[in-house]
Structures are given as structure tokens and as C-alpha cells.
Length: 180
Image 1 (cartoon, rainbow, N blue to C red):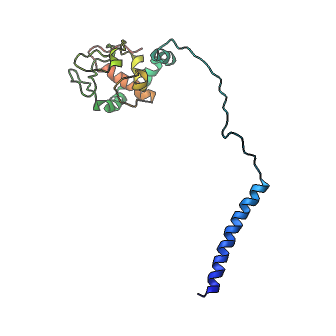
Image 2: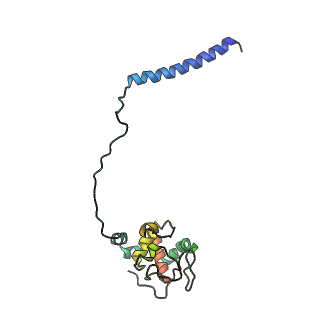
Image 3: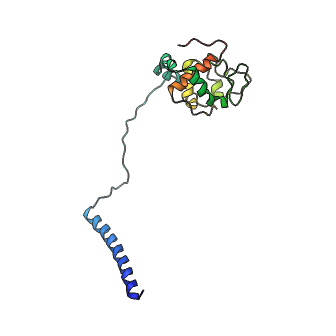
């Protein structure tokens, strides 16, 4: 390859670079856009102050028809879904506490009622019973239902899964509560 060929290649590359830069400058002149003085946009939002005197469990309990929810569940599905819980909880009569407390006779029991288990402060001071409504709200997302709980579980999003687990927990008891 002689020097004349190399000069033609370099000239072609330079012409392309000049053409790209020139088209960019020309388009800036043709399509001129005036830049704002301050970058960004102002988003105006109405300030609304809401006073909520009810606890989260009361609000959710009003929204959920627990009888209709419990009608969705079945014991076989509850036993299957409970396998997620069995990694931390036992469900057998006289079962010992694992990472989480034993859940035999949990439906209708006071929250934080097992003496030989160290509950989180939030759950110990919660002061309610594990009703169908409480269990439903708690199983959606435990950390959101009782803020400060040490239960690290993402929750059960599907209503059928929650209802089935609650039925299974209720059935795993000396005196199962009547369904709503």
C-alpha cells in the first residue's frame, strides 16, 4: 500500500468526522431550543392532612369480609402452603419453639402468650388475640402489620393461601374456633 492510498483513507475518515460534527452544528441552528434558567420541573402537589385514629388492623378488618375470605380456603392447600412456615414454626401438639414460636392452638390465643419464647417487644405489647382477621392481616405482611416484629417473612399475597393457612392453623388446635 503506497502513501497515496493511506492519504485517501485518512481523508475519508476526517471527512466523515467533519460531516457528523457539521450536521450536529447545523441541526442545533435549525432546531434551536431555549434552555430554562433553572433546570428541572416544579411539581405542585396539594397538601392533604389526614388524621387516622384507627389502627391498621381495624382499617384492614373493615375492608376484608373474613367470612368470604375463609370460604376460599381449604385444608389441603393450607397444609401445603404451611410448609413455608414450617421452616421456623412447629404445628404439632406439644411441639417446641424453633426460630419462631410453636403455633399449635394459635387461633384465639393472645399475641405473645408463650412463656418460653422471646417475642419482639412490638409483638409482646400488641395486646390482641390471634383472630381470623388478625391472622389475615398479619400474614399479608407481618412487618407492616405489627411494626417492629422480628418475623422476617415476606407474607402471603394470595387470599386463598392466607385463608387456607388460617384454616390449617385453626384445625391444628384442641378446640378449633367456629368459622365466621
